[in-house]
Amino acid sequence: MSSREWVYEKFSAFYKDPSYKFPPPTAFSQREYAFLLFKERAMVRHKGFASPTALRSTLRGRIPSDVYHSCAYYENPEAEMDKKGWQGADLVFDIDADHIPTSCGKIHDEWKCTNPDCKVSGGMDGRDITPEVCPACGGVKFEVKTWACEECIDTTRGETRKLLDMLQNDFGFAEHELHTYFSGHRGYHIHVENQAVQSLDTMARKEIVDYVCGIGLELFDKKRKKKPKGKKSKTSSRAFSLGDYGWNRRLKIGMSKFIAESTKDDLREIGISKRGVDVLYKSKDAVLHRCIEEERWDTVKGVGFETWMRIAEHVKNREISQIDTVVTTDVHRLIRANGTLHGKTGLLKIEFPVKQLDTFDPFEEAVAFKKGTAQIVVSNAPQFSLRGETFGPYKNQTVTVSTAAAVLLILKGRAKLAEEQH
Ligand SMILES: [Zn+2]
Ligand SMILES: [Zn+2]
Image (cartoon, rainbow, N blue to C red; front, side):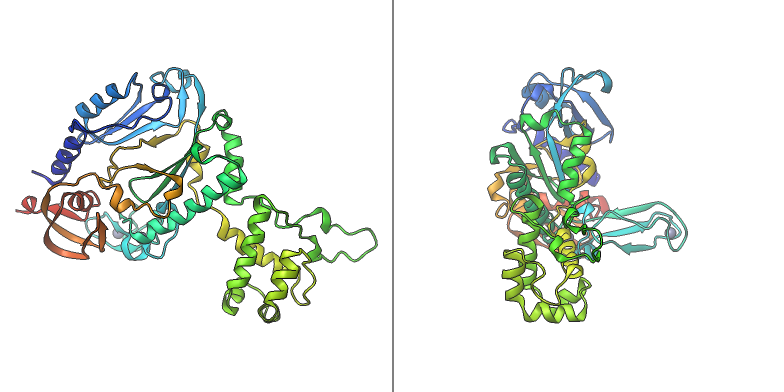
């Protein structure tokens, strides 16, 4: 049996298990469903189902590696795209380590030139980015190996936390309108289900994306920058005017925090002049109290407009949430279905309460294969944990591991079944 056939058997047993329950999305029958078939590796789209039972029997019959449904609601989910009768869509966010630079990426992510005479390889930084051409042979095809480690998940969790804070405190969505999921791979999905967002078109969703990403954000009030005629047009830090809501509040809190915690190096790093750094560092309390709290921005000599701009810019970049913008603006987007297996990991996309973002452990809760073991030959893999058991690091060795670990390593291209090697 090949390793992939073995994994197929596991996926098959999972969906055929009589106790398997597919958690249906709201407005179940108005969604388009799509499957990537495991054996055929082909995408089947434009499916509609009258009931979750009907969908489950398709899952059992066809065994997909990945299951998706539309964020949109349609009159006729099975019709061609322009005849579906779009009736609205949830507002969906995807936060994925593939799009966020992480320091761990250098350790566990790798590209390899597929030219058989070359096979040069190199590291990545967490983002799904390979060189455009192979530096050795000029080839343009690469095999990419990524990994999802605790640090990747911590990074995406942090971005998710910022997003949830914006959705609740700036946009005013109630907790019960927000659905949070581990994606089954390297991040989180947030679905907003609320009448007010359903009818938003792509442009309106782009505005929300811009807000979340801090695009086009004015860091100070331009109107107040203008000087009456005849006066010197020197920009004054009086130009700042931060209020108590939205991005203004975020900047204010963020700037206080940054200044309170910063070392001289932190301040130098963001480009503040030597004098500015000295003054800021010496008069932290005055700066925090008088300038930020009381908004008397120009009351500490030596901390002027330039300095405030640099701090605000730095804080903005820390406070934005690094979402995959394309997902949010696409009103026909297919998104992985809750309660189904991810074809790159064998882990589940799984929902958890918004409040449990910090305590929910995907490497515990998203494990689908809880029984059995397998003997595999691992080429290389970093150390990881599943359901409290620690594995690796491995380098060219034969080991017996839990089914979940074997499925993950095989799907990640890091291992083969031992029997396949013979
Ligand atoms: Zn090459
Ligand atoms: Zn990582």
